[in-house]
Length: 463
Image 1 (cartoon, rainbow, N blue to C red):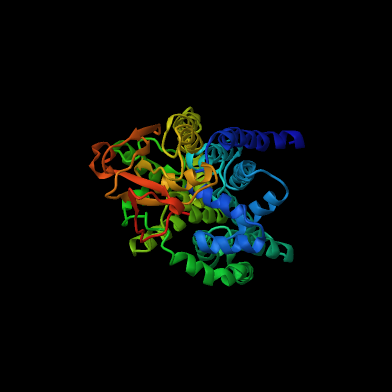
Image 2 (cartoon, rainbow, N blue to C red; image 1 turned 120 degrees about the vertical axis):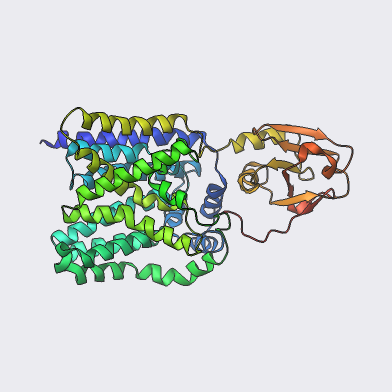
């Protein structure tokens, strides 16, 4: 195959990935975690970046260092999201290249397009966060490990170690992929000749993360995982499906779809088991999920869908393997089309994960006369509003969570459940107004009006 023809499919996959991620870069507001990232990237020095990551984040610092260096080159804060867009395109192409090791061209393209169009990948492929980079490094790690097993060399040792260093300094969940890969390295007969060498390279790559460990422990004890509830098996079982589609989330139909997805992945892993590369990819699709789920069941509340994004490319490859194992009839292309169509439709119509227009809310608040002395009432999780409104309001005030006090407020601004801003003029105490039942108040902590009282918060806010 000529070079232009060999590049046609990777180019097409990359274009699709960029096309679905790029619009969100310039239309979506920063949500609360992105505001935390933006504050880190706004620091004047690299030392200040690392210090703020340690104080406000629950992940290692590599992505923030890359983002800060990009910022130092004069790139605007919103445009730094393009790092995630480019990473998403690279992830889709890397999935295609890796999938070609175990399936044909058409099935590899299916796996790559599932990653390019999957809901969780698109959502995090257009924001100021590290998740898309985590998924890319997981694929690069698998590729580097297979290269080491196939033909070990000093250069491949270094590549494997560097990939491990980058992955472990990007997200702590990369450790689950490492544990799964080391298990494969020591249990798979095909890896016997390079077990010690590969393990040594992995251990060397983990040294920078080991140096960071004291800070990681401090981050863990800051209780930034309070929002993760008790163990739910259904949530764990739904993870492979929810990485690609939010359709029927939390419904009986969704449960049936989750079970069907697990059966499809099981069939793909069974087909993959015939080759060493296939066995590694099957292990990386399943074992990190079981490891994280077990940790959650033991009471370590760190399990979240976005943290499991690194298994997504391997889940997509397993699905492609299952489709590729179907008879060479109309059934195979129809099944592939149905999978892609389901992901595309879900991406087009699903409202789960959509970011409210916080910038427009803040603008409406200002138009309606917001001043630091006027509290803001919000409904639902107040942390979803606090950091974004702090970012978009003039002078970026520090907003405190508050409750009604005994003194009357003359005026209150309300963000309704539908996201509209309304202005209320009041005669009595806030607590007596039935329209505010279930609302949380946000007030400028430097000028908190007497009609509200600050709440004591026992846990850290989402970073």
